[in-house]
Length: 118
Image (cartoon, rainbow, N blue to C red; front, side):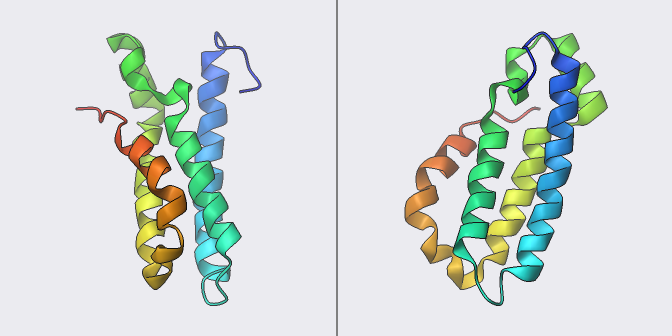
């Protein structure tokens, strides 16, 4: 992050902008890079989205209950939101999934180890 760790509100605002941007990118990738399949566009989306999900600032279980609730009330659990976007993109790959299995296995496993909020 470009902000110090104690600038938490700015970090969360930055992350909400990144989340919204990645959602726009996912729609553009699906609309423009599926018929004439562009592997790099899809791959870059998955790598970026998973890096977003696994960043330290979004690991809510590391915060106090009060801070966690404040974050969830204001921003939701952005990891969960991005997880739904990744899932949607994965299902949209169709037969092209095979091209991503070797390179994404480790990242997807890392993503699945993130605890889910109750």
